Length: 351
Image (cartoon, rainbow, N blue to C red; front, top):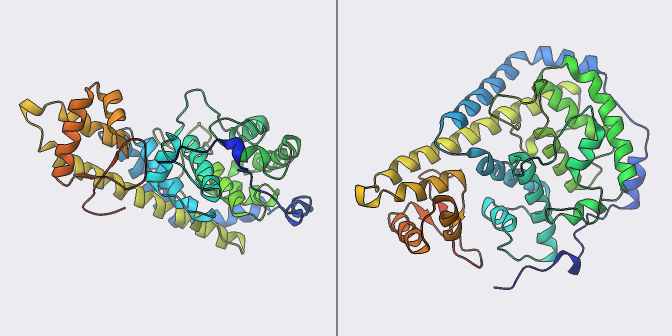
């Protein structure tokens, strides 16, 4: 195992070309908000389906035995990472966030972006960056581009082609656009926000810029602070972005939201079914096995150290319970080189 290379030893920046910078200086092209309102009306039935699927996902996340934001965030980000130079799996994201993994220069860029995105979508840090379209400064803090010494191992965010002043100017333009989107429903408003982000030159032409745009859109709150009571993000995938008329763009966005919510719901249902199978191994003499099972519902993948930390088990007992789950075919090791062995759930149906 080669230890993780310090950030200073290589450049994690997404280097924007002069062509990209010139494109961001181009005159702002903005859709008529009335066109979005009209498209919203024509797509009312599709939006209702998407809203129902989001509601079902929200309800399932609230009722299920697990803290799902962290796990779900990694699944969302793993799908969005198709836009990066090197797509990342949920296991790789988890390893990177815990700094258990080393990576090449190119792979590290994608992992740094994925770790940043997972932290944002899951709201992992208490009191961390919040996102308020009416306050551009919160957007700059959310992006974490403002300083080459930015935290969370994402120094790449501080050198994305422009200084903090340039980013703030573009974010202010986008914030002004969003003032006109209050007439739209939360889903349509998110679609408008995504394409407005692109129009303001914030996404640019590099895939990392589009990845960032989708993360921002996913984390946008509704008027009351959240899309749903328990759901702090909007499920999205790269399919949310198409070019064309306003109607075509909103139609693709709404369809993607609904499909992403359905996929996440199926993933959680698989995890619930896994828990039912795993709990059959629990006996009066193995009562603490239930604690180890719960850790997998809150954090997947996990290590023995994480099981110890979350359950209070000793290392010997944690390893014993993990071995029982592995022998029963309920968990497996993903095979990535780590300082400590990692385990992940084995579903009967893969996500």
